[in-house]
Length: 246
Image (cartoon, rainbow, N blue to C red; front, top):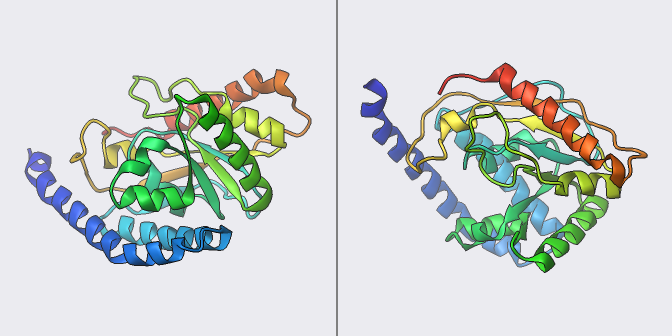
């Protein structure tokens, strides 16, 4: 009862602080994006990272880190996907500069879509050419810019289990580029902003749990199923370990 009474007021507070702060920064994003190069993308990324950390604290959803973050290196970061909030928490959570693989549909959201498009690599999963192009861009980012983030479940996990079945893309890219995989999980974002409705916000900590990077040196395509299952098992175990009630 207490939560039902307060939730509309808290949701209004979250929405107002979000839109006011994003709209205030939007002109700077537009100006910086004119450069359309790595330096411009990194500048936008830095602003988002600082903003996301501050905004999460202001709305009572501070980030808590569990486990050891790698000090340096480029990785293919894989994380579970259970909430809209995941796409914001990743910025203060992931060490170092990265670009995410994002759904093309997200770029159509007014204002937010424009910003997201500056730092993510957009893919239309229904289009073979779009998927192939995104893989080429991801390869280029790994060699020239920084890490890559991929949600291997592809979309929200609405099943009863800790994870949905994984797609092959992240693991194929890791093997083809011989890039280590950094698994991490977000056990709490579904309780902070539930995927079932845009207004289901509730304050509390946002834990990010880091696992040891998984080396793929010497692995070939034949080892992809084993690698995928290994990462799935590691992430599933951590999500079960840190699961909290909603």
